Image (cartoon, rainbow, N blue to C red; front, top):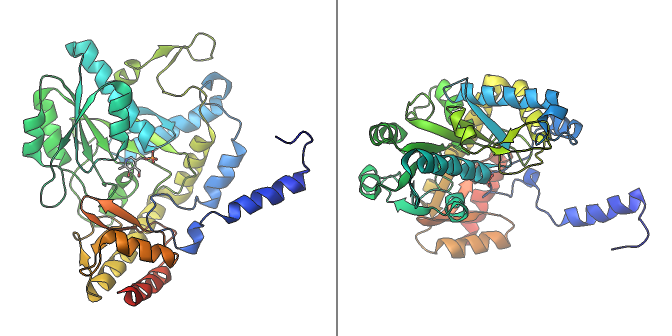
Length: 385
Ligand SMILES: Cc1ncc(COP(=O)(O)O)c(C=O)c1O
């Protein structure tokens, strides 16, 4: 470390050098990420609340009220206004909290010691982390021909040690929506905790449905759903880190509560202690600014570009893994492998990702991607083959 401090100018110049090495969303070249440019309204609010700590909410009552309003707005989007929960770092932490609540409930109410969770093969890898951290066994359910969780496979995996079943509304690789209504019935019948990971789909499905797109039910409207993950830092245009975990009932938070003797709150149910209030302020600001109509427009726009890309790919002879249901397109060439294609695209400056199940080039049409970027991308693809 330097002994003498640098000037503000020197620090800023050095930072710019580092930042030059980063890719920019605005270039339209980041095609495999579920994050995007935060909206300026959200950035400003984030900056204004940088110092507030939701880990000690009695000191920041205004920020805590913002968090409560965000939880209630998100609950409203997802079928139940009077939910409870927290703003946290993102989908990984939200899924970890949900699995912790489920494990603790099963431990307390059913004396299950070696708990198991059932999630589809398409679930985000955060469930592997959660299983590892919480000492749970993860059992992966097979997918059906449409890459959604296969109900029969779930039924076969249920055992006396099952503490939770996970369904995904907007899978990471293909944007698929699992049969949550069936899972809800099954979980009510078997008295099993049901968690829905809508980290990606949560900010899309309700708004798209509102303007006529057809989607299966997936939210708190289904009585079996105990918790939902939703990430404002994905399609919500909030800055990273802005994630959210919602629980149907307060009792799930109580199941995780730990005494916090020296703080302004008596108990804490989150995993982290010190917790930024800036995400709550930024999410509140952008949700108020966008409103239902703003998010519906944003989602529709992303779906239109998705459709444009999918048609363009088909016209050029590529094969789609399946017709896109959300703003994710996964495709393959009949001539070269997905990994080879990804590496050639990378050399041309396109940051695509390759899905694993099945291997395919995966493009997420986030709000930073415009039609002209896709025209250029399709042109470049012509030159590759
Ligand atoms: C469905 C789903 N769940 C969870 C996550 C993890 O979210 P994060 O990276 O914000 O922790 C992702 C990330 O892409 C996701 O797509």
